[in-house]
Image 1 (cartoon, rainbow, N blue to C red):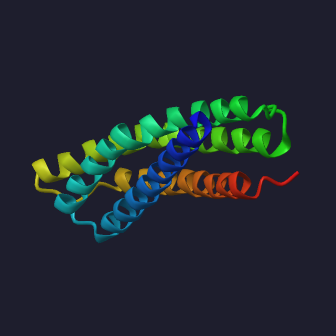
Image 2: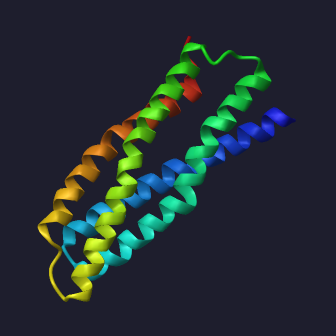
Length: 154
């Protein structure tokens, strides 16, 4: 029973992590393209909040629950699909950490634009490019982790 509960929580957590990330990225990217400082300020504020509430908690829980399930099942962490899942997960996390700082900076730039009734500054869009460039490998790494979790190739 412990294994099934851990597996359910692991899957639920991975769904929250992936769904929050994909949904937040979608809305932040396309709202940013509108160049409307008011809309951008609101969306980026909620994206930062979602990252703290959902992404941070699930990004911590995922490796812990994965390790726990491997422990319960007696599967060594050196098993190739588990090893590569952890490697890819940490690649995604390494991309995500600077994204958090970038989003906080973008939130401040958008709010300043609203406060001063100005357009979004060029710096906002430079950060958007870096944010997007980091999001692509993070997304692909997590897609690969999902594959490894389901297929469990030898």
